[in-house]
Length: 67
Image (cartoon, rainbow, N blue to C red; front, side, top):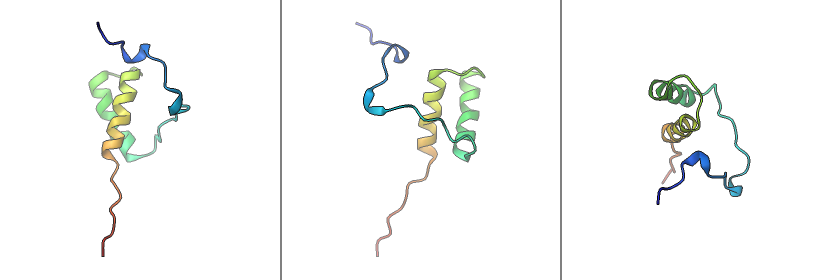
């Protein structure tokens, strides 16, 4: 049996309402450029998922200071 495509599944209620991207950030701009190359100029769910994952990879993690 084939799994349902991602757009056919309902959004989990635990996630809450979707938030828009911070379009002024450096992370968004570089991720958007990559996504445009890969998926073309049209907006799609797969493209937005790609952008959100790329932003999460791009964001630097906070370092804990150990003395």
